Amino acid sequence: MTSVLQEIPHFTRLSERVVRILGLNPGHLTLQGTNTYLIGTGSSKILLDTGEGKPEYIHLLIDSLKKLGENVIISDILISHWHFDHVGGIDNILQYASENNLPSPIVHKKLDPEHDKSHHTFQQVENNQIFKTDGATIRSILTPGHSEDHVAFYLEEENAIFTGDTVLGQVVENGTEKLEEYITHRLKREEEIIEVLKKSETPLTPGQIVEIIYVKYPKHLWSAAEHGIILHLIKLENDGLVKNIDIESSKGKWTIINSKI
Image 1 (tube, one colour):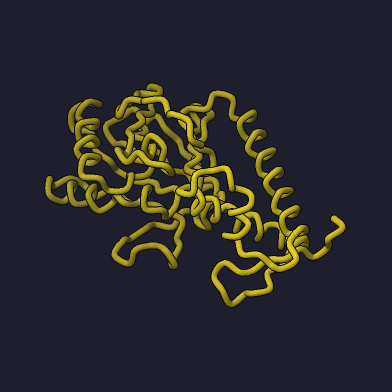
Image 2: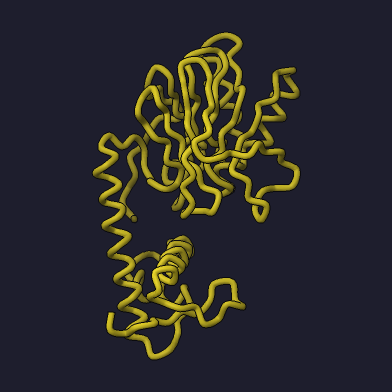
């Protein structure tokens, strides 16, 4: 989690129908920057995610469209989930289209009324919904977990999945191996959470669990780790292994149900 990240270009052609454009927002949580993608072989592209709204990103996006040919436009925007580093560029993109008399892209997203900004108009994304443009057929796969509204997108022509924030990194060649690695890691984290709760004489908050499990990690990562711990606790509660005894608080206090597990 603290290793030096490989530098990658701001503009990368990944295939004949996919171009990756970095969101120009590198950081502890965004790594080299949010991955956004222009998809399609014709003049109408589908944009997947929009970065967090850095002014430099909209200029990079415009230059990228020009690189791809004359009169290349964005017809649709697909959003993987509500987090700011994925939806933050929507306003700038729509404003650019309006100011330049271009068709306004249709923005598609799994609706999340609790987090979606009120001024955004989203078209609801359903599971297995198909989005098409020249040379590309994209199917939505609802993948709640990282967030309630998270969606992955499957590009049929290339047997490739855009995983949003469910799998971090750039291009993963062996997807099955990477997913197995993630599952193994998640199961190990569950075991650690259970052991911490078993050893505690009192119920613990997710933050207290983080302080124990992530004691050797930098503290600036603890906030993101706490979010992950909460998701694990909810899953373990559904499995009947732990219980939240403080449902009034937003994060709760958690205890083990059966100390013999």
